[in-house]
Structures are given as structure tokens and as C-alpha cells.
Amino acid sequence: MSDPSSPTASKGWLNREVVGIGLASLFSDWGHETATAILPAFLTMLGAPAVALGIIEGVADGLSSFAKLVGGWIADRPERRKPTGIAGYATTAITTFAYSFAQSWPMILVLRGVGWIGRGSRGPSRDSLLADSVEASHTGRAFGFERAMDSLGAVFGPLSALGLMGTFGARGVLQWTLLPGLAAAACFAFMAPAGKRFEGQHAPSVRASFSQLPKTFWHFLAGVFVHGVGDFAPTLLILRATQILAPRFGMGMATTIAIALYTFHNVVNSAASYPAGALGDKLGKRGLLAVGYLIAAAAYAGFIFERPTLPALAVLFALAGVHGGFQESLEKSVAAEVLPRANRGSGFGVLAATNGLGDVVSSVVVGALWSAVSPAAGFAYAAFFTALGAVLVLWLRGNGRNAPDSGPARA
Image (spheres, rainbow, N blue to C red):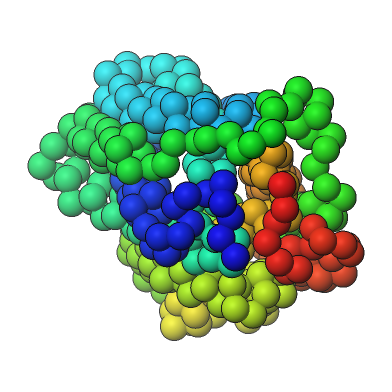
């Protein structure tokens, strides 16, 4: 049944609004992933120490997580969603372009931090507008499409970096990123819907925005967080593949193959995102999300045992990509069904911040186990917690009308 407060819902799920938001995600990821691909080499060119990249990424991710919470509170005010999204996309585009003028790594740190604040703050507004653009029964398809477009940008980014470096150099490539970055802001400005208050809606206070989130949502977040503390950054997969392949192929070729495997991972992620969302609409999102979590556990467990061959590595990277498509599409669509419309923005902000915190914990713990014990210990930890997350997502279902698979969310 179509929500009368969502006038675009009656147009079908693949409407102008959904396409516009998807294109914004594609172009934005294309731009900043191009920059990310050459950032280590650019920092080396600036004479930055190895620790600089870790500091830059850690500070940026921390600021982004905080911005997601603030962005969630802002997104509970529908009239501010579109301006926040436009500003967020434009900020990421301009700061990424400005890397090209940096003469030292602290300048990159400042620019990356500001850009990631824009990236984090726009997320809840974008997700709220996307959820309002379709019927509740089609949220899986809509979020799956948006995630597929985002992941496609993550494929185009590194490929563009490789293709442009020889012609333009690092600074020229960074300046080029302004084109897809501004295209993202333009798509969002001209195609995303304008947020509108439904009858009787009032902007909640900061405390009310978060305290009024339903218990079912917090139960769901518990499973998401437990999964998250095992779901480490995919750059560690690249490192492990390089270590495995180096004795056979040499370090240079092993690095190239590992990057190719990661690109393949992103292709699979993009290809899996929409089917995962569409199947979730038909079969139940929460159960399918648990399947995605278990796929991650299987992929990580595959690295524990005998060193895999190159074909086996391709299978493991593909499984990790399928997991990414399932996770990114279905977590948000489950949340969209659970959350009351008045608090949907805050809920998306909390979900994003929970994933951000999980990413920090998992990458630190897996890295520590890897260094102090063995890589197998890190992957065993990851496999255990991603599998436990699947169990909790199913077990902590909650009861009542706000359960994710019980029908459209009610305001």
C-alpha cells in the first residue's frame, strides 16, 4: 500500500528520484575513490611518513562517524534533507579536488577530515529521501540499486586512477576528480526529491530524536554491531593476498594481482547489491541479511586454513563482495521498515555510526591479532563475530508491528 505522504511512491520503485540518488552515489564514489587509489603514492611524493596515511584515515573516519549522528538529527527535519545532501556532495568534491594543491600531509589531513564530515552528514538525509521515494514493499530494491551504483563508482575510481596517472600525473588526477564530484552534487540537486513534512510532524529535540527510536531497532543494531566488530576493512584482504602470492610471483606482481582481486571484489559487490535488495523484498530482509553475514564468515574462514591458490583467492574475494552487497543493501532497508517516519533520519545516522564504530574495532583487533599471533588468528576472530552477528540478527527479532518483516513501517 502506498504511503500518501510519499507522492513519488506511486510512480514505481525505479523513478526519477531513485535514479538521481543512485547517480549521485555513483559519481561521488567515482571521484573520491579515484583520489583514494593514488593517495598513498601522493603522500609518498610529499615526503610523508608511513604513519601519516593511518592518521589521516583514522581521523577522517572518526569525524565521519560523528557527522553521521549529527546528520541524522538534521534529517529528522525533512525540509533540510536536500540542502544537506547537496552541501555534503559539494564539500566532498571540492576538498578532494583541493588535495592537488597540498604541499604537506597535514593539509591532506585537514581536507580529508572536512570532506568526510560532508560525506558523513549527507548520508542520513540521502537515505531518508530514498526511503520516502518508494513504497515500503520496495525499499530493498531502492537501496539495492543505490548501493550497486555506489559500488560501481568504487570500480570506476581505481580504474580511472590507473588510466589517467600516466597522462596527468598525481596532481592532475586529483584535479580531475572535481568533474565526477560536482556531477554528484548536480544529480542530487536536480533529481532527488525535496523533503516534505507529513501532517502533524514536528521536529524532535536532540534527545527525542534518539530516545524515541523503537526497541526493535536497538535489537537489530545489536546484531549489526556484533557483526561489525568482525567485519574488517577490505584493505586487509589485499594485504593477505599480497603476502600469499609474493613467494610465487614476487612482490610487485603480487601487489598488482591483489589490487585486481580487490577490483573484482568491488564488481561482485555492485552486481550483488540490487538482487539482494530485490530478494529481500520478496523473501524477508532480515533472514537474507543473516545469510549475507554468514557468507562473510565463510570467506574469512577460508583464509584460516591452507594457503589458497589464485583461483581460491578469487572465490574468497567474490564471497566477500557478495557479503558487501547483501550487507549494504539490506541493513538500510531493514532499518527503513523498522523506523517511524518522524525519527527515520536519526535512525539512519545511528546505523551508520554503529557500522563506523564496528569498522574501527574490527580493523584494530584483526590487525593486532595478525601482528601478535598470526593472520589465521585475525581471520578466525572475524569469522566468529560475523557469524555471531547473523545469529543475533535473527534471534533479537522483537515482536510487534515495528518488526522489520511485519509490513510497512508506521509513522
